Length: 54
Image 1 (cartoon, rainbow, N blue to C red):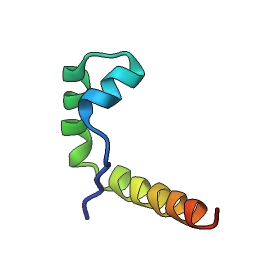
Image 2: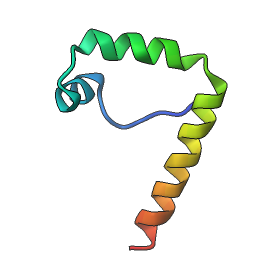
Image 3: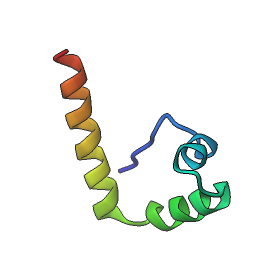
Image 4: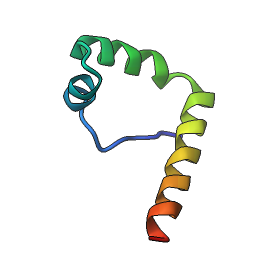
């Protein structure tokens, strides 16, 4: 299972006011975490449901 976001690492870094390389390192660590990926997919599904109801 893969979970992707439609926001760039540069944009995340800018919004969080952190170095882009820190975002890249975090993504690399998270890629292998199946539980985190599943949680992200669940959040995305909930957001899509919420948005579609508006």
